[in-house]
Structures are given as structure tokens and as C-alpha cells.
Amino acid sequence: MGGLRGDPREWWERARALTAANPLVVDIGIALLVQGAMTMPFVVPRAAGLPPATWAAYGLSTLTALPLVWRRRAPLAVFFAVLAAGALYGLSVDGPGQPLPYTGLVVVYTIAALSSARKRLLTAGVLLAAVPVGVWLNTRSVRELTFTLIVFTAAYVFGRLTDARQRAHRVEAERAAARERARIAREMHDILSHAVSLMIVQAEAGPVAVRAAPERAEAAFDAISATGRDAMTQLRRMLGVLREGDDDGAAPREPQPGLTELPALLDRVRAGGLDVTYGTAGDVRPVPEAVAATVFRIVQESLTNTVRHAEARTVAVRLTYRSGDLVVRVTDDGRGPQGARSGGHGLIGVRERAAAHGGTAVAGAGPGGRGFEVRVSLPVPAAAEVAG
Image (cartoon, rainbow, N blue to C red; front, side):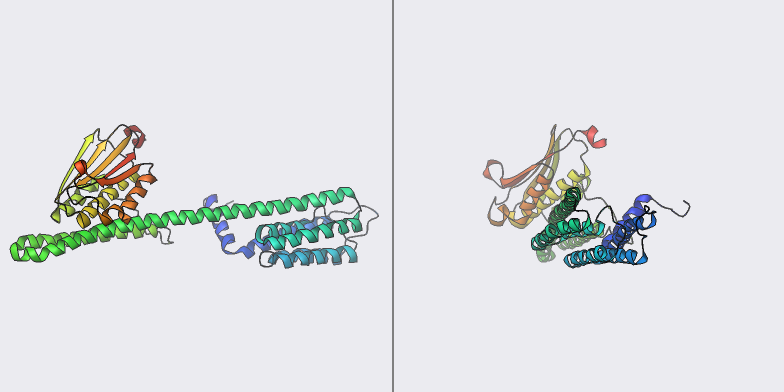
């Protein structure tokens, strides 16, 4: 046992990776396993009166199992090769019989799992003709005929079940990939759209500030620099998460921005000249990291929309902690719901983020029909549940 070091699960994962990358290894292993099973009647002593097992008979049995090495690449051709080798074995030598038609079962399972409906139908037709002929040449027993048909049917059914399971796995993998692409698109949109919007506002205000108040121009350029650095930091963080499966294992695993980063976000927006107020209501309590990150992104996207579209002077961010949820409200005094503000990708992303946590999001005119408001409700557990 001293040579078997490491976690058995690690060995198992390595074996799975090897077989997934090299299907031929699996096929060779199956052929050897079948050959081993077919060897047993040759090494077990035979009853008195039966002719001895010969090397010729054993060689033909090997010829029957050998085509299984190519069972994935040409399953129908392997099927006919196995039939031909089996017929040659039965007609030319008086060798030991087999308790099960091992090679035939493996190739029927493979055709059922991998081949088209036309090839499966052809295989079924050939079997319905070949099995009765083989039984008639062997024992002419109804019992053997029934047993043979049952085991071949079982092999076919297992093959179809395998195909159905693999299709389901592929569909789920495609859905997971689509969800991940949508998530990455939302993250990239939120980070870049927010940063670029703030940088544009600051850059447009810079020339005016240079003529009127040079000290404000310096602050504007500092804000542009800080916004760009923050965007680069967040992009590196995201790319690090995407690379976390690399072999070097050096990808960072930093947390997503949360509620503690909200003040810095609001400061960056204030630096662009927008008057931002922030407040909380209710019993403030910890929330799960995923929910906190979602709140940050929702506020970020709402502020980005205000900067880009609202022509607002003030915006209020308010978090209200209620018994079973957290309500996020971002309200400005701008132009209200017009054009792109009511249907852009950003608001779609806000709704998707809220829905991912079982919450709701609405956007439209602010109180009294003035300005624009984004209102999101996110279910959050009690503080004890978050801590647990």
C-alpha cells in the first residue's frame, strides 16, 4: 500500500481525465476484459468426453474480441466483424461455449448509444435474423433463444439510456455556459459602462474647469485616473476568476465588491459633480456576500444610467432593511423615463440580477412623476442565518 499515495478521489479524477482524453484506452481495456471473460472456459477443466480446448479455438475467440478496440470509431463495421468471427468460430472449431455473448452485447450497446436511428434499425434487423440461426445451429432450444433475445434487448436499452443521459448532460452544460456568458456580460457591462461614463463626464468638465477653476480641473483628472484604476482592478479580478482553473493555480480569488464598497462608489460619482446622498433604514444586518455584490452592481448600474442619461443634479441611494428582504432604491431628479433609459441592457441586467436571487426590480418615474427611480427588492435571511 506504500506506493498508493495521495487522495483516492484525486486518483479517480485523474483516471477519469485520462479516459475522457483517450477513449481508445477505455476501448482497449474493454476488449481485454471481454477477452479475459472469454478465456475462462479455456482454463477451466472440461468434462470428460468433450474434446480438449485448442489454441486454434482460443485464437478465434481472440479474433472475436479484437474488433472491440474500434467499437467507437466504426460500431457497425465492428458489429459485422464480430458476427463473422463468431460464425467462423462456431462452424470451424469445436471450442468451449460461452455463458454470454460478450462481444455481441458490447457492440450492440455501443451502436444503441452512439449510432443513428438507421444504423440501429439495421442492427436490430440483423440480430432478429442471426440469433435464431445461431440458436438453431447450437442447441435448438427455445430457452436459449429467449435468453439470448432478452440479453441483447437489455444491452440495447442500456445503450439508449446512456445516450439519453449524455444528451441531458450536454443540454445542461450548454445552459450553464449560456448562464455564465450572461453573467460575465453583465459584469463587464457594469464595470466598463460605469467607469467610462464617469470618465467621459469628468473629461468633458475638464476644459471648462481649466479656464474657470484650475484646482477643480486637477481634481477632475485625478477622478478620471482613480476611476480608470478601479475599473482595471475589477477587470483583473474578474479575469482572475475566469483563469482560476489554470494549472498554475495562481489566479486570485478576491471577493466581489459589496456594501462596504458603496461609499467609495458614491464618492467617485460625487467627483463627477453629481450630488449623491446615501442612507439606510430599518434594522441594518449582515447579508450574504452574493446579495451584497448584487446590491453593489445594481446601485452602480443605476448611477451609471443617471450619469449618462438623466441630466440630474441629485440622486439618492437608500437601503431599507425589512424583516424578510432588503429594498434598494436609487432615485434622481433628472428627465425621467425616456428613450434608452427605460430599455437598455443595464436595466435588463438589473432585473436579471434581482431575479437570480428570487427578487424583483421595477424602474420608472420617481415620486410625484419627477425624475427616475430604480427599486429592487431582494430576499435576505435573518442575521443568525447569514452568520450560520
